[in-house]
Amino acid sequence: MKDKISMPPLNPQEEAVILHKGTEAPGSGIYTDNFDNGIYLCRQCGTPLYESSSKFPTHCGWASFDSHIQDSVSELPDSDGIRTEIVCSSCGGHLGHIFYGEGFTPKNTRHCVNSLSLHFVKS
Image (cartoon, rainbow, N blue to C red; front, side, top):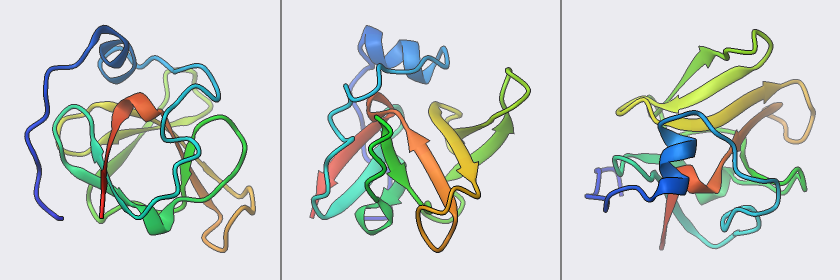
């Protein structure tokens, strides 16, 4: 799947995270421990963001990926001046943050993503 799919309207919790740059509580996300084969889409606009093969366990409380589908995710300076925010390149919806140099995978990259920002399609 490389095309967008139509998504239903956001609920208030999803709006708080995706539109207002909130963060879901650690360990509360439905995709934190999901390791089924499939693809993760932007919950707001349906753009494919992550393949399940890039997901890995970190036990940090959020879904973690070491790469994204080409051109699907953009990096922005976070308002805290320390972290780097990641957003959907298509709609600008807040996904979470990206971290480098932690050594979890050979790519040395961790996309720390709110489950509320994602929609999973099993393959």
